[in-house]
Image (cartoon, rainbow, N blue to C red; front, side, top):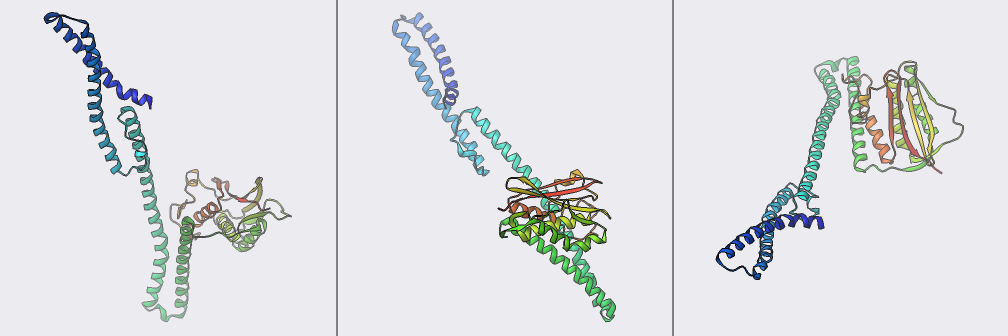
Length: 346
């Protein structure tokens, strides 16, 4: 505050001193030539300085204040939430810093909005594509049936079966979208319980054993877990996470490959679950976007592996709802590892 006052009065002091010196010299010369120069003259500089200082300081302060206040008001119109946390200052250095800070904040805000806008456009495009494919499929089969193919029993059964699969895919996508929305807004409550994570992993292995067998992929633990490892979480959601990760490892794994799950102590009250495969791997530039809705590494848009494109996004949201972390490590041609933390149960 003292520095602010010194800066504020600096201009007035210098201006007053300059005016006083000039006025005193002029008065001294005037009295020297036209009157007697007596001792009372020496009071003049002090009185002149005081008057000049008060007048200059008041006028300049008012002049600057009115213009600075207008700047504050203009910035307030831009809905700055934090610009007026401090009182209005007429110190140019402080004002410059505040405006610079405000401008930087707005620049970051604008850049963030641009990124979000790009993400929104891409997301809407992906949603449109994901919904359009099964919709057009269903529409095509139904129109074919209506055009007369319904009279052929074999064609009718085949086309209705394919239309039904298209509807199932639509339902699958919409359910996943609904789940993500609930997770984001906090409407999907978690039911915490104590359970054996090794048992859950084994259940998922059993569930997808036949799917893995089609590609000759082995589902296995890293070691033989002879004792239970208890964790505290929502059992159903954790099984959903493991299902998504293991299904992905099967989809993008190589024939005769391996999907391995390990459960390790991380710190005193945490375990880390790792799902590792020796599949095709993921390029580094894709890793940061893997958990975005509908983001696919394969830009060709191929849907040969099926899925809603929301699996990893759901995994991330469920993990975050548990206040835990998920990690990804991958190398093209070597494989990928997805790992997440869980709280240990007593």
